[in-house]
Length: 67
Image (cartoon, rainbow, N blue to C red; front, side, top):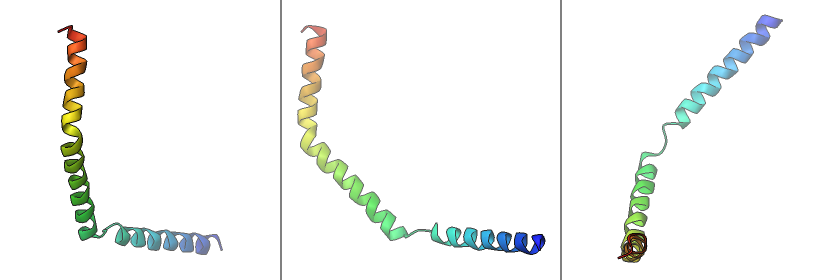
């Protein structure tokens, strides 16, 4: 009885592992789209906030250095 229970448990774990392995392959076009969208957002945010951040950095450096 114990061996049949153990055999069923091992079989279930193997099936689950195979299912997870198949699910982990992912959707390549989806990942590419997410990566491109993230890169696009970074570029847009950098373009909008870049000058303001540069001015803020220069102001902070001038305050620290005393010039």
